[in-house]
Image (cartoon, rainbow over all chains, first blue to last red; front, side, top):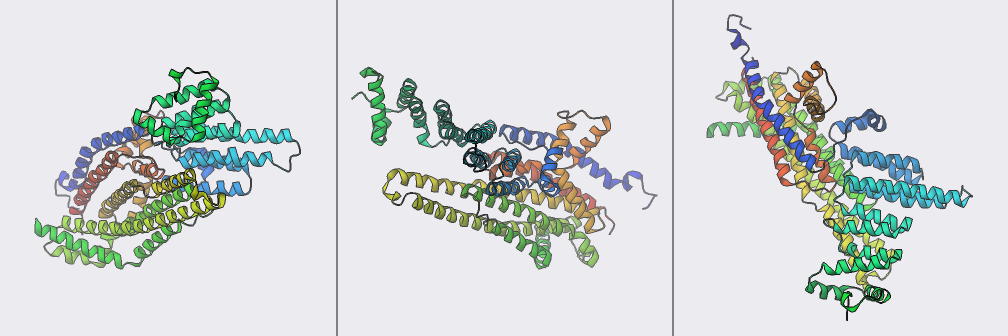
Length: 267
Length: 299
């Protein structure tokens, strides 16, 4: 380097570098904060890398995660869920499900299938466990796994409250595995209120209240449903409703001695 | 201006031709295509899981092999020219250094576009294969459960809903957003490699340093939040270090929003454009820095 040249000239590359970076850096930080804020609004949950997570994943998967391959890492862990299911290693399976749902808390597939694996597969397997002669212990074990599945679904709702699938899955669990129709009605109702919900979920609360024996609530649910419709939709709906549903409503009206003017189907 | 553009395009085209002829990059591309195609072989899984896996592995392969192609092709741009001494012949002609640099970078961007496009076509093929498999297995499932299900309107409705669900998952237009974001991240990585290669003396140095920056870029969010006082307590030195990291290293982690898209969640186009804009401006800064560095480099 020619030392007879002035210092600023000799360091001109560093000077221009610093100048450009100095101009860009504040813009960069503000922009990145804006992006982060938008992602918070989108409920995008990033997974903090902790010591426990690193131990659970192992070195290879941790590097994969740090390289921005979180979904692939979660999928690779999920393959172990299927293996554990085939080997009927339920506690192992539960651990993998929890790890996957922690890695990708916005993936409905993991919550939905994870809860189903525990509340249905693990629970039924425990119920018919040939190694356990005591039926009460089998029942207890079966209930334990249903509870674990329910916990998965409830955490799924916490992370994805706008997805109807999570509410509907929880409702199904209450209905089919626990026989708690009141709670099933509540969760079906919540599912029906979410965007993109399948149309038939709106009828399920009324059916669930009916199954629970709460005729007043069932009738109220049917009426609420009916009152949401326009006259044209009512005509169409009356045509669409299956005979058994129509009969169920009429039966309720008769059973509860509903006055004609308050009936869903007055004629 | 136009003649300058012509020179840049000519160098870019030449760089692309050279890169295509390199066996390492072709092998990487083939591996990428194979990995995308292999994602359909998770037959033990349920249909929802299979579709998720194809999407994750497909986009993962595009990102991973695209990263390798971006890194290897950019890292050797300038060192190879210096080693072969071709740079002296080019710069002796009426070609400015900035034109040489932009032309080289254009070649890499073209190479990346080509690679991402080919892998995306393979990805689309894998997805359609999965859709076809899914529809087929759904129909078999209905046939096995209820022999004459076509005669029941309720069953037909349910079947159509299941098919629609599969189609919606596979033909998700948001996947275009995901591919664009992956591409933007790859071009940014190339920009970083180009900047480093303007002052590095070997390709290895460029590759290792870019890889480290790429990894640190995925943790920049944490560094920034702590530096801005939204995390753990730090000493003055720690805060200074995190500040330098936050100010210099690009935020690569924001691009993992691709995971949200792959998980089936809606990411508005406005947010995608925000990220693409960030990548674009960052790239301009990187190119400007590369130009400064290369202009004053003694050849």
